[in-house]
Length: 109
Image (tube, rainbow, N blue to C red):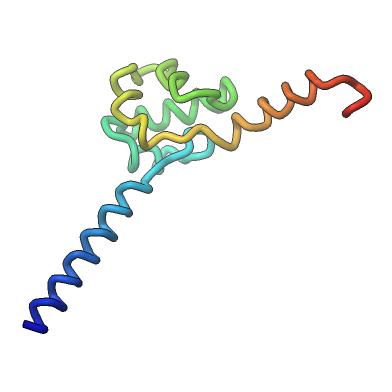
């Protein structure tokens, strides 16, 4: 009976760890490499992943997840399918901060 309990606890722990690993698998489209994008995003192979990186380099950081659909070969269905795995960070934050500073009166800057 003790062996069964230990085995059951081990199995439950393994399942919890596996589930949490999948839940945290996200990618920041403003900083990720083509390899990272390809690994995390569904229906994004090497060519599409490189197209995302090229678009980002040519047009600046993405401001929203929806902007990813502007990349040639990436449609809205792909964006929606991957929405939970996509983060828009790093590159988008400075633009928001600059707009906030610009909106403040000169005396407060």
